[in-house]
Image (cartoon, rainbow, N blue to C red; front, side, top):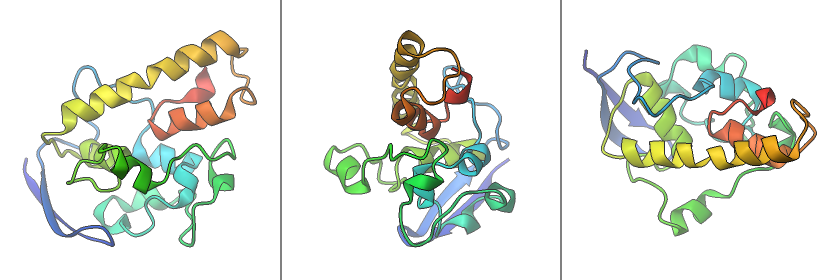
Length: 167
């Protein structure tokens, strides 16, 4: 399987990548996200602003129940109703943005989920695994499934495909 994808959105024009794995399958053994991109978008992540101009790149069903806001980042659209994001310029200044995925980790995850594999996979999976420290903090400081405890941390975990509602 090798399918060519050409991206033309506000951040990339003529960017080409190839899907070499079936969607949602053959992930690296150390990468076990608890949420799919569609589930994340339906729950409410990134203030609804993240995917508003690139829907054509991904399956239509991802956007059926997505909580999106074309005009601005709206933290009320997030599942926990709080802002748990840094602006893109912050991530760019830290050098954390891979040039092929100018929107950051979630864009990488969406493309990885769809079947793209690239040179940045190992780094992004390490970053995803590093978020587990927040799970430990929730377990230490919150009663099980107390969704009002550490809402910002819980929202941040949702942004990284961890289902913090189960913690």
